[in-house]
Length: 154
Image (cartoon, rainbow, N blue to C red; front, side, top):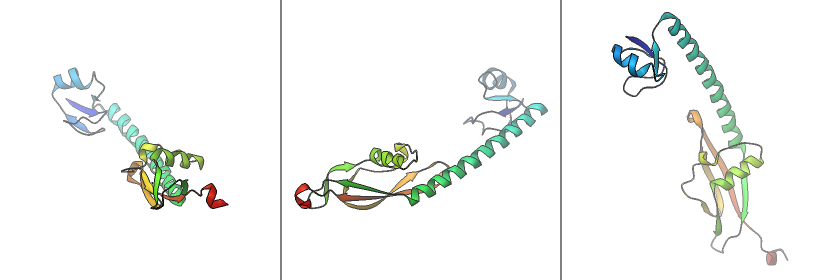
């Protein structure tokens, strides 16, 4: 029986493919679980239309992601933290701190997308990579400065 896959099935193929499977497998497994439909002319046309709609949506999402990447690249985040004489921070700057600072600039960004191997614990300028969908590269420029003590201000 010829069927059109509605979802990716690891042992058979990708969504939208028309494949030949045994009748029992299609009737008892694929069709009841809504993984596939029979490959009739009506279903083939409907699936082609559905795939075109998904492709347009993916293009729009990719464009939004590229614009987000540009916004993030233009952004410079500055943090002031207490630090020792060697330039080592007493605390740290985490991906949660970065996500809050980005949201203060009006950009919503999930903290899990910020790719930090470990929190920032030193003073200086650092580029932190951000993992965005559609493999669009992005990075945040982060500057960590030493907080001036009350004695230094006087």
